[in-house]
Amino acid sequence: DTAVSQTPKYLVTQMGNDKSIKCEQNLGHDTMYWYKQDSKKFLKIMFSYNNKELIINETVPNRFSPKSPDKAHLNLHINSLELGDSAVYFCASSQGGATVVDTQYFGPGTRLTVL
Amino acid sequence: AQTVTQSQPEMSVQEAETVTLSCTYDTSESDYYLFWYKQPPSRQMILVIRQEAYKQQNATENRFSVNFQKAAKSFSLKISDSQLGDAAMYFCAYRSTGNQFYFGTGTSLTVIP
Image (cartoon, rainbow over all chains, first blue to last red; front, side):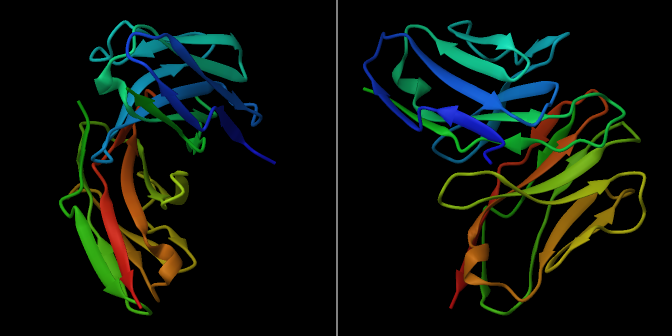
């Protein structure tokens, strides 16, 4: 049983295109996240989102936008792709809530290559 | 703002030996959680171990244990009886009471046969 899944696993596209990465979790969690991992393996949070609140890392360009059709899904839309967007993108989920013992569960990652 | 520092970009260990990966963090909170994640070449992020800050007892999961020093804001991971499958990137992470996660820059562990 896959807890957090992402599609596609690999995405190769041209500069200037618009693309989406899908994420689904079947853990019943309230909070989902998107991370970007660059070529140096540095993991940087982009968004965290639950039913109540979207928290955006202020360094994320507004070309990136999360879309959540329901609690189990948080898709990442990227407009006008740039070379610097090439990275591995991870989706994650957690139970959420400040008083809950919480662990993030990660998806397998999507390797995005912008040509 | 919370920060997580892993000062060892790379570490190596002989198979069956013990290795310790260091992690320090900066916070003004008293309640928080700390994690170690493993990322093998498959890229999947795998939870290794978790520690609640209010617990004085160090967490242990089979061959993995932590040395949690709250006053020093230190959270090191000890891997005993290292196996080839332990080779991976290891990330230390901090979770705040506001449910924000902060990750360190990672330590690449090589296991030498």
